[in-house]
Amino acid sequence: MATDRNPPMTRRIFVTGILSFIPLTLWSSLAEERFILTPEQSRIFRSWMIRIISAQLRSGPTPRWEQRDCVGLVRFAVAEALQTHDTKWRRSNSLSWSPLPPELILSAKQKQFRHHWHHTDGTDSAYISALELVQENTLYQGKDPNHAQAGDLLFFDQGESQHLMVWMGNFIAYHTGTITATDNGLRSVTFHDLMAWSDTRWHPSQNNPNFAGFYRLNFLSA
Image 1 (cartoon, rainbow, N blue to C red):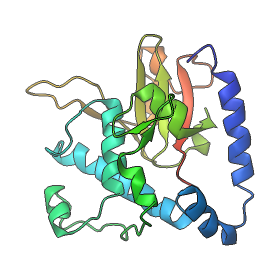
Image 2: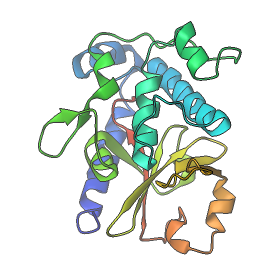
Image 3: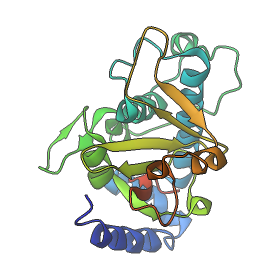
Image 4: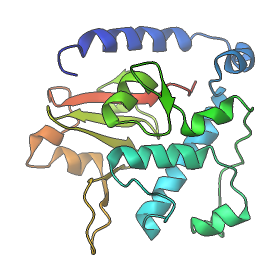
């Protein structure tokens, strides 16, 4: 990741800049052609993703979330945000009585995002590593937190291992990758507190070489 980080980031910034100038009236046809979500769908998706992660933090992991690590949290939250949120789903996620976002209405093609992550070899599957998720399924947004939106990902490259966190707007959520009988591995931390950690490898700052930056899921248009 470190050897080719700058060229991909430059390309992704350029692509993101182009997308920002597309008139809103063209998004519906573009979304159908490329299967990406429209700006309104993207906003609703973000609301569901944040609500789902918050529910895991508050009530503990739902049994349906099987692969519990940092990238597993992202895969689960994406799949559940793209799910139909009926009464049974809401009860199982302890959200029966909570104010919830409007239902996300998707085309048949857009629903394919639920369990289709793109790999470097050109294949798609329901499973993907943190590195490939970022490399093949996101757009780079830079290292400035002021440019991040809720649902964007923080990517840390520690050499032999990579780690994802989720920008929640007012705080950051993540999974440690370790589970014990008394610790489900889920954590939340404010940006300010994370910047104060003694282990500077985890600082989401411009001058931290281990912090690759903020990344946005590439099926979102806003």
